[in-house]
Image (cartoon, rainbow, N blue to C red; front, side, top):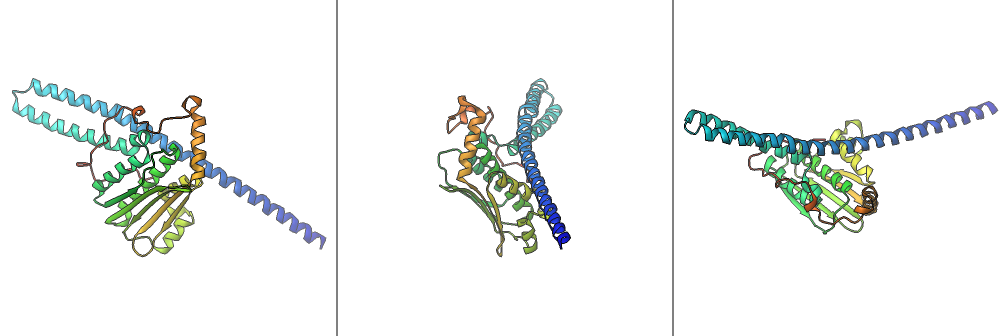
Length: 293
């Protein structure tokens, strides 16, 4: 009897130790995942700047050289036609580079905040995809902390990319609101929805949920928020919620990182952003779904 009791205690101890190890490893994986998302965001920001400031400027210099050649060969119709074709290709490349740069990291997100960046992105998505999108956004006049604005923008971006690729939807409604308790982003489409077994796997954070949903869920988890997915009959609804308590915490962390000299930044810092042209128009953009997580 004593031997059985001792054996049971030993098994209980081993079980407790195993649970502790599992919890520790899970926490480490979550931290690693969050770091990877941050690195991804920084890499997107860097690539956006490089495309605009390096590749974009090189193509602009090419356009200037083409203009000089057109003046030099203005008496040669054949050469002028060829130069005009090259100039048109250069314009197309400049437009595509600018679009990719802004989709990687919209400067509006840094300069004027999530509400304006979301409005710009939704408008562009509708023109690129042909899907009708309505946006219900109630501005408050106050900026959210940068980490929260980036997280919600990436969730919006990934959600609409999934709509375009998988849902077959004709219309989407996007809602972005915040009150005393939460900031809430909702995306609802009228597409084919998701089968019950697939929806269950998405909710359970299984390996089959896909990189996009996993990334959105991890962004919300980092901010002590929640990602909810519903598919009732026709269409899919996604709801990302972040509590206001975390907003205050994130704002304080950003103040500490910036130091006392930047403890009270202006609400509208558009004049302090990178010197860039206005966001690109979408009249001639390719119909592609860029930047799926």
